[in-house]
Length: 325
Image (tube, rainbow, N blue to C red; front, side, top):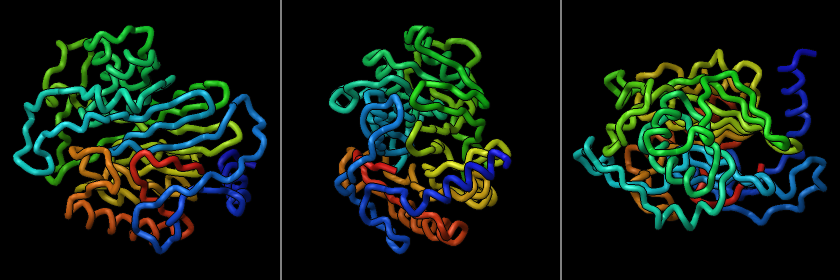
């Protein structure tokens, strides 16, 4: 049996017993889900000690606790004001890391995954790497920006897509992806860094730097795909077939068939979690603040997912709520 078919068969066979430990997950609900008390977990058959939990940190950011290990994806907690949501947008906004917001939430990290290096994905990463000693994975641009911030090269790993990284009780597969485009068919702050630049000072000093996706497979647990932007190179998704997909909301219609191509490429995941729909320049407090236009886009996204992949459950997350898949 081909590997893709086997993965799909095993995933579908487990669908009736798979558990998402969160309320409000019915297919008719479009409101943020509330976490429910975790169900009793079966005895682990892996080297992992403890349950696997996923906490959304706004934008495309996640904290994933796998036993005594913590994986962070695009951890952006400072949420500085650039005028993006209130206008006018200030491209010269200073990069100001909010240690008072980060420190209470980042007690540990073993791995940081960077999808791309825009400020709302990368800005806090060098500080977190210094605070925790975590290894940072990202594009060559992320590598050179890390060096510019003084992160030791021994903590930086450049990846480009296709790598499968083995951490014992979980693996991380790197997937080449694409950044979304604005209504003018352009990418904000395009460009790459092929050598360490001067220390970044403003948000414009952090370019997109190419975009990646990541597939996390937990031994004895779920497989979860993380996106950081709303475009997709669907041919790179063949065979991934994750149980769960964290999907960035599209903010323009210039990328054709984004959700149909993404969901088909991922073999229609059992759970789809919209991300990057919140106003990420407001405090990290529930309920998440969503701009009026973005609320409309979010509702349209939920409706589209249900139309394209009717067997998928849609989970609209709340901040810092532990979800177990």
